[in-house]
Image (cartoon, rainbow, N blue to C red; front, side, top):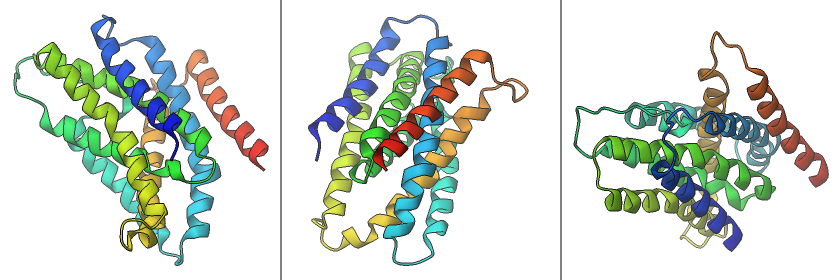
Amino acid sequence: MSLFFILLLGSCALLGGLSVFFVKNEDNKRLKLILSFSGAYLFAITVLHLLPDVYKSAESNNIGFFILGGFILQILLEQFSEGIEHGHIHLHHHQKSFPWGVMLSLCFHAFLEGMPLTGKDSNQLVFGIALHHIPAAFALGSVLLGQHIRKNLAIVYLVIFAAMSPLGYAFSFLLSKGDINSLGSYYPYIMGIVIGIFLHISTTILFESTVDHKFSIKKTVAVLIGVALALAGFFIGH
């Protein structure tokens, strides 16, 4: 288990969330470019590495059902998270209650995202997930402040969110080593669910925020850089 992975995942999410106290512009263009880059990178890594690996490690041909299930699960999660996984910010200033649906679904999503990092080529994947968490944490911080959550308490919730992916990584590590009773045999199927979530998140990031499905030049460059880095890692690793 890599301490570097734990620190990178936790620090990026925490810094992304804490930046809400210093950045006034909620529609920060730089965060959108980071989203485009991370979405393209995550999609490419999923197609090039995670999908082939999970089909090789699975003992049956039913892994596709779990990938489809993960895709649908993410759709259901977004009914509660309101798309914060994509960096979207939906403030309801008339509400002053804690957004439990947003917090719980986002933490569950982040926990699952940490799980693939015990597989091959995880050095590349960890950067995509870490970058993806920056705008997601920023959006979460914005929602917490928008719901009039006290600053100190908001920081506590951001720390909890930042810990979710490292916890998912640690849990996946124990699964892959077979240390949690017999659950290790189900690892490929859990990974199938995570892959389905990744496919939904990455494709939504790439296409949902475009106007008339047209990419700006900056966004196109960010996407191409993300894909190029994933391809470079693929060829270097092979």
